Image 1 (cartoon, one colour):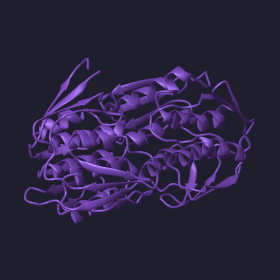
Image 2 (image 1 turned 45 degrees about the vertical axis):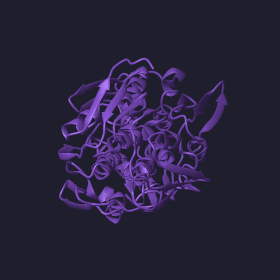
Image 3 (image 1 turned 90 degrees about the vertical axis):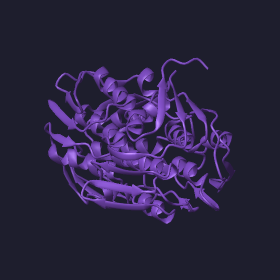
Length: 421
């Protein structure tokens, strides 16, 4: 297993390009199953989760080819509707194949998903949505087995906004007979990106980027091309890395409108942040970080996928801050590891209380999930001395060559391959 070795206290300076969004790609790839032919997804990040999803639909009979960051998916040979445990267990987003398979083939056998080790992230909303559209669903031997002669449009209201279930329901409803309304739909940019692809394929969807989506089912869709949006979590992570090192960087190929909440919090903490077109710049070279409270919430609020990184930043900010995760209430496995670096963080219910300390000191720390890994990298960048971040395969799921991007910005960070701990 690889690890990162970081020599901290080096300010980041320079320019970096933001990769395509992991979370968007994981919905766009299975959407290709809704039609026969070649769908092209440009700006696709080359990440382990993307490779896993590509392997999954390849198992179903699709052919995937990467040319640079263009992913071409040929679904003309799809002949299998079973998503096996050995692939699905690696990633919760594998549940996304359920809707497309049911909608196009009337049958799906999808293993109950795995993925990150933290917290309950149930698939009940996905299953209930398919049932609402007329599918019969059974759980047998760890598999979701769905059957439907023809899905039927329905009105479905989510008790809570959910990215995954909104996406899965959208992909099922576009080929269902009649009219579907989704109330309390997710407004995340990744869902909007999925709607852009579905619309390009011939789907009839209204209410884009709103909490009420209406879909008029069509008989068939056709292949299309869409560009994957920039990864707003990667962008916010890099901006936070600049802040924690008192650096000054510019990010290209961003969507500033997707970063409004993290940027506002960085400004509140004392950083100077500006945007122009598709670039965002941060100047934290001569600031003393101030403590800023955060509560995560669905877009356009502060993203839960930035909670861990924000805790790392607040570890060296003056004062006391409270970071509350309202989305996933037990997503704090990074806290004991940050405390190994000298942070002063305690947990109460679904909140972290962070008392800023004068400095962090390098240590050996263990990654436990994707965003926790990023927080430990940030802690290492800020710490005096050497930090070793172990098990960075978690980070490789969602960040494209993060250590190379940080190195080009001046960080002293090295990947050590195949290390034994």
